[in-house]
Length: 549
Image (cartoon, rainbow, N blue to C red; front, side, top):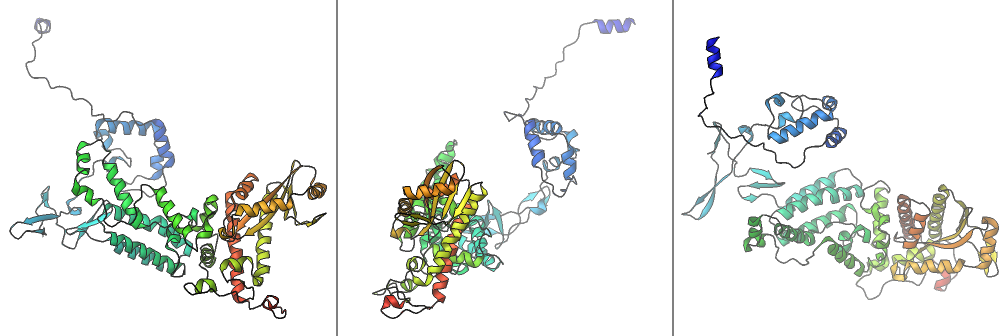
């Protein structure tokens, strides 16, 4: 006891060994992972097969969000999984400390032959990792970096070669034309655009890529060789097919990429972006057009389309852009054959005598004896051969609009005749409820070349604005407040702006409004086909006797 009293009672001796400073925790995040983020991650977790660790989807779902939050924040704070976590049965842990496998690695060595002033590819493996020699890439071998294939000679495949291979596979696939267009726009063109923007490319390559795409579209859509180039590249909302033009967009994207480098906070990167050699790599010589943004690009091709004789009638397509989504969405709204024919009507490339005679001194007259030039506008709007199909096209739209508003709870009277002092008036639709009455009449007019669609709508409103007619309508529809509505489409499938606004106000959804424009185009296709098959002639107009078909 005396010994322990003496040992424990004396003063402590200081430790002269140096004291190691405490290391600060390696926390590089400002905010930890929240519980809400873990709950959302568990909700969004998809049921897939187990990974290499053997952990099933149900096992991960069984973990509580609080446990996952603690686990993730611990890893973020420490910078690595702790020993207690390394044995944890979660999908994240086995992937955090993957070891480098030398068998899956390779090297690429370029050596300089100063005497002969040339670069050489060293095919011998000279690098070792953990006692294993890393294999070297051969002269013909390549590796993928940022989506681009590189080898000892730089980027191996050009964008043109890659594009031709993809288009060949797309052409051989058993798909509908609209599905080919959809995959081309959403899958192939973005890949090629990325390849061209991030690699070195010449203006000639961009031009050839555009020609290759247009050649492919002419084949799969059975379009004539003189289809306007602007019809392919103009936006679908403006009447085109919305196919990206590499020659116009790649220089713009390259320049935008260079501008973005000038705005990074790193001084070294900003200085490098100002070097002439670097700026030269981002610029293309001989670029025909230069755009600052996508809006200027769209306006350029829209004007090109409207300046063309075939595309001039699409000037009002952009007023109601949402009805043109059928062109690019790849839906089964139309059969493949009807999709192609509707595009031909829309772009005015349907084969007619007037189109075939371009470049000659005089366009031929209609062979039905109409004494008018045989153009597509005449065939679809005036020719006596197609009068019954024009009426069927009109009646189909009347029936469609009437059924749509009737589903929304309105009462509809179709094509009822009313006697007035000015003559009989027969509006297509009388739509009414207990408070309102609409006198609606449908018309499918000529395209922009014959005047704006608003003029046709105003003429309809003026024709049916009559006090005597209003009195007669009130007898069958009730004393509600009356208004006259003109519903106008043109034969290219464009919808008049106020027509679309009225249909939307009546509760007709966008899908049905789009379908109405498609049905107008289908009716125009039937008119054009009937004109080609019939042989009747109007002898009264050519000076002979009348004869039925």
